[in-house]
Image 1 (cartoon, chains in turn green, red):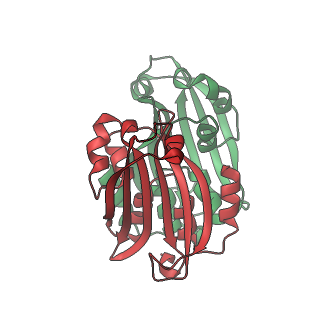
Image 2 (image 1 turned 90 degrees about the horizontal axis):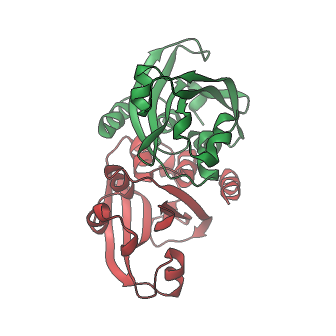
Length: 170
Length: 170
């Protein structure tokens, strides 16, 4: 899976910084801050609880109807949006000490995990270029999805959209 | 600690890709592969066991005299070296399933952790630019050190040296 993901990414003719953000197994907010030399803001667009349906219950190994925190955010550096992210996170999988932060708006995931010394791994799922004009003023977005695993459970499923344009020449 | 590390990095006038490699909390080998679009080789320079002295015993919370695996490697992409890394890793802290891979030469750390689904976090220690002509054909190297934490123990201490020159314009 990881080899296929990497090979796909290496064959895309896109700016290096975009390729790096789409391919890192570390924190995106962190990388954006290093690349742009600007502070990165997390702007929350939506946040609410939804009950797990059959697919999400299976994804998180929870029961149908269990509560899932749904959040959509934009990552903005120097007034420019660089990433639009949707996340799903089952309440019962959240370590007690991070639950409050996870439910709060405007704290990046990487920072929450770091602040609470949470050990994780990130498992890549999918990567593709899509025609999509909804989130950014450009013709194409690069979409990737991955899971954050903690104590062998899926703590969070994340889908990130990156605009494919020249804002990445950093 | 993390804020100081980031601020220091953001103020360095160095190529973006070097700043990104020196600042990521993810796998370096992985990033190098994405940046260069080349396969990355791990060339082992040294590997042997040493007994813990007072300082390393304290760092790893082990006994003086306990065995530590010492490894120095170069990360090479497209025949060019990009990183020179020294690592210390106490034998008794290695999860049994990864011990064999950790003692073998030429497998990158990120790949070992990923292959065995090891959950970790990376804690930064230090970052500085040094005059050093020993490892690369250039005048300055960027040196950073960090710890890889697993099950709340220090699994590995790593020091990486990056050449400060134009090979990072990728």
